[in-house]
Length: 448
Image (cartoon, rainbow, N blue to C red; front, side, top):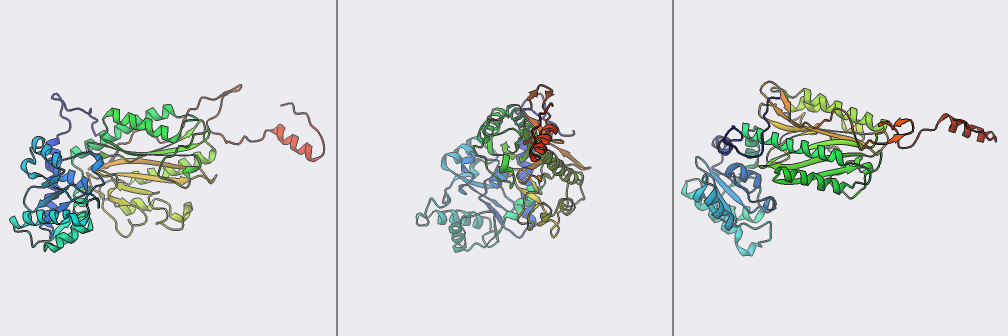
């Protein structure tokens, strides 16, 4: 393992995460791409992009408000407009921003109605800054935006173009500190899976598993548990994406996807189990699922392409779907960073026509799925991979090379119950003799 696993604190006696370097190198990547673009400036409302450019964060409650915004002009430093008290906090505690942290309110995803004039206020703020720098006649790149704000910018004479692609490109290659944070984030999920594995048993509900995982992660220092997808039993096939209050039962398959954030950096980390024992069909499905995943991981190295990885995965028709769009994200790869889905995207749907070269510094997750022949169970596994200069390193370490059985403590008079068995008991020789005798109109005493 080439990557270090740090503690979650900063210390004076060991070099850990260098947050000054993290802030500087992220911003430098965006500035470099902006300089090469047609855009005079970049305006971001996506909170992940705002954090990437300004290294500010006010809580994930603001994630869906599209209210905070930052302007990055050509050859200049970013300006941030934030909730009033947050702006003051940044002035006091974020010296890399200082007076470039200002109060500013957009439309709160429509909660501020158009007649309140907030869209016009945002557009005016942006126009003034652009005019001061002679950039008001240059295209303005935007990542996401509410339509009234877009229209207000146009009325100010500003040409709006796509800026989301630039930010996606900036974020595709991770800095050394971003990779370290992603590794630490995955380590927290390692621990959550260990606690979960020890706790799973018949009678536990999916929502209880979600609560347990969330507590472990927050206790370890997670910033945000974005989701814990807990899927069990017949809910495994077809795959659903939300937990319920379903009760785990003996023989159930169950898989989880744990998505959380440490210092902004996410995980997307599936693991699959059975409760008490697993059927032969489930064991076979898991092996098939693992084989497809391992074949993809083996190809991860600089110079390969996303098309080469997608090519080792099965076609949609091979596992019960009419086309690649219908099974999208079941055999899948995606970049991971400040968001759970970033570049590159790896899928048979898009990668053959639009291959992307794999480069050192990319971090992405690879996830596979395979349905069991029983028609209701299925396997789902995922690993997170860092692309190194010479190959790759897997940073999701909770064991998944074989199907794990949780709560396997059943003992019969003949010894421990096998962990691979069918839910419906196979008939013994004696039972078969009884059935055959009954068909002949006879009664047979069974000795065994």
